[in-house]
Image (tube, rainbow, N blue to C red; front, side):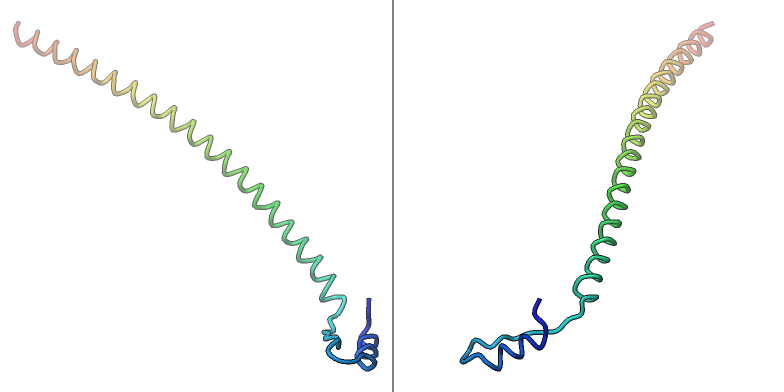
Length: 97
């Protein structure tokens, strides 16, 4: 990598528009901080992937529960209809007697 002095030396000895513009940044800023940020992003990505898996499992469990409850409700409604019909028939028989 070129240092600040290398670029200044090049600019002093070059002719015309070939002068190089440069900006000095620390190793900490350009490498260490970027690696740290990538590591944090990776951890966050894993966290969200795990969260999505848990949400999918929860959603599937809720769908299954909903299906079971719906089936029980349907059966209960059918049983109630039958009981009402029998009760009505018994009521009519008692009325006739």
